[in-house]
Structures are given as structure tokens and as C-alpha cells.
Length: 164
Image (cartoon, rainbow, N blue to C red; front, side, top):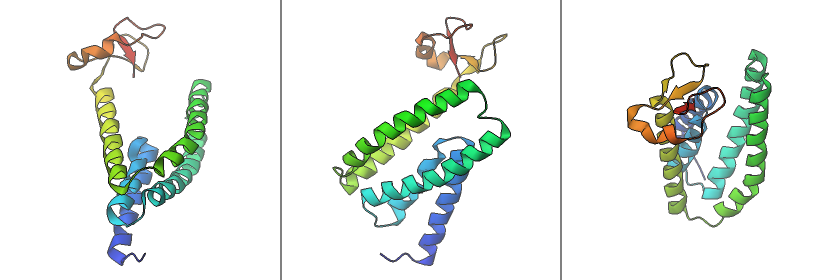
């Protein structure tokens, strides 16, 4: 497969935006995947495999930067990262297997669903408002998100507060 200069430039922009997005907010890492799916003729396995390689690069560098800045020194943060990384490692072989069963169109639909769900979850989190007088990170669901107030409460928070 041959990629022209414009396509390579656009892929580089997707990669740049993805690198910034994944290290700034997390879900930005899907941008290179979208770019590869839209701009190349790669198979779903080629797109997913290449995306994993880009995530490894941003993961190593981002982890080093956040560790150096002190953001990953807190025990709770490290424990959270360990649980998520371990679960991702267990899920990776399953994802590889499932990817071999998906057509190009099906992959595109799954990618669109993943991006949509991510967008909705980020939107839901941003719609929460801080609970006055509570510890940092405890929020009360806004009136448009009354269902969030039914989520389990954390120690030290009011019954209708949720962790942000």
C-alpha cells in the first residue's frame, strides 16, 4: 500500500492530536485509530495493531511525565492504574481474537460506537457540579442527570453525591 504525502500529513496530524489528547484527557488516543480507518486501506487488524503501537509509545512517555510531575505517586492512583492495566492486559487477547471476526464495515461501526460512548461519558462527567463544603472530587449530579444521584456514595460524601 502506498500513502501519498497529503495522507501521511493528515495521519501525522491525527497522531499529534491523539498524543495531545491521550495525555491531556485520556480518550484522545482513539484519534489515530480514526485517522487510520478513514485514510488508509488497512484491515481492521492492521488498524487495531498499529493503534496499539501508538498507544504504547504515548503510554510510556506519558507515564514517565506524569510520574516525574508527581501525579502518579499517590498510592490510590497507582492502585487504580495497576487494576486498569491488569484488566486491559487480560482483555487484550480477547480483543485481538474478536477483531479477526469483524468486517471492515463492522469495525467502523464498533469504532463509531466506542467514540460515541466515550463522548457521552465525558459529557456526563462534565455536567456534574461540585458539592459545596465537600472534599475535592465529590460532585452532585446536575438536575439533568438525576440518575447519577442513585449511584453508590463514597465514604464522606452525601447520599446524592458521586465521585468526579
